[in-house]
Image (cartoon, rainbow, N blue to C red; front, side, top):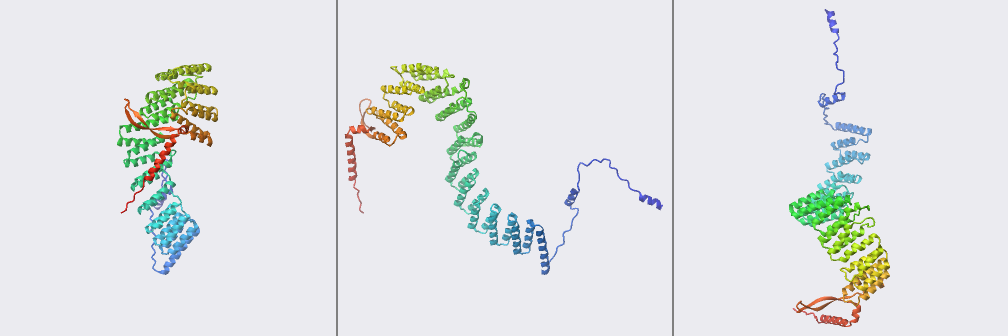
Length: 628
């Protein structure tokens, strides 16, 4: 039985066969098992026993042992600042402040740029109320590491808590000399506001917006003035900020803030001016908030016209962007011009027309010019029908005709429209000139065109002869026949002595010949107009001559003209009504030229009598004294 029992005991247990030998989806490492055991506290290590020291010798032995351990750890690796900090904190816990201070100083010799080391050192001094030590320590820290804002914050906070306000202000001033980022400036401003030093805070803001000229800082400055009741100062800050950024660096945020400020002051007209100015100078893609706020303002405080004005402004911006991206997109110009015409602002509409016609097609092919010519036609019709400026209409037609390259192609429509305009003005001669003389010029028959001009100026009756003469003279100048143009001026002056003809003649000589020849024409004209009853015309001539001498003359020539300028005197004359009755007297101004004054000596007598009268009136005015 014993042997059978031993056999049973010697049997080896069967090993379970692993049917699936593929690796598990989730692999568990030994490191993971240890970490989980630690988290579940499967192996709880009992804390070390507390040591109670009751004997001074035992305490000294304990301190010696701890210091030796700290010194050993420091000798192993001096660069580990955490060992130095633990060492100093332990000395502090032992009430050995001087030893702790020594440890911190030794640590600073190792790494004087360690921010944590300075902070722990200074905080220890403050905990033990060693104010002068802490102050000296902060002073050293900000001198060595002036870019560490934390030192400045704690230093200024300590001084303020001690009630040393001038010292705190001095710390802030030292800090600001380094031009730190935005927050230190705002902290300095809040410090001054805590003590109601508004003027000091204002001066800090002045320096702040120069060092950090961001828009949000200008807005902060303006809101500071507004919150303290200085409305005019706040407005000046906004105006200065707009001027500071100029047109090159404009931003919609600044104008939105400015407009909202004026809206708070109920200055709605100012708000509209700000929005319109900004929308005129900021590109459309950068002005979405402006449009949005402008529309909201007009819905709240404006009328129907104001809301429509916002919509028109937005559409104007869209058209501006289109014509900037493609100046030769004439359809966009047409839409833009229709919008401007509907607004009714003549000057702005005229400016847009001038900008549109300045975009001449780059190719001299008629198909590229067809749409462009209609800009000129619309411009002329606008000036004639909407504005009623016939001279401007005529100038538009003439400029268009001169611009078209007639030797390559022409547009009969523009000739007919210009001629029909002259017919509406009852100027048949000008119409004939457009339909014949210019036609001959286009065809290149110069002699025939000159013959037509000669026939025109020799007509006994003309509605506007000056147009024909001017056209003939301009024709000769275009042909560079300057002698022919001079002869035409002389022939015209035989018919009329009008001052504008003389001035035009002089300018012609100045431009195409010489200044001396122009001076001769001015002198000749002055002599011709000496006996004219139209004194204003002679004055106009002398003023034109004076302007000429200011540019091209010398002191002698200028003095010569100055001596011939007239005196302006006030006179009286009788007036009569339409029925012939006496209507009393009226005052008017007359011009006395030096040549006329010399011929009328009685004028000098009158002047002397007037001076004598004024002198007597002055002598008779004796002051009267009052005795009490």
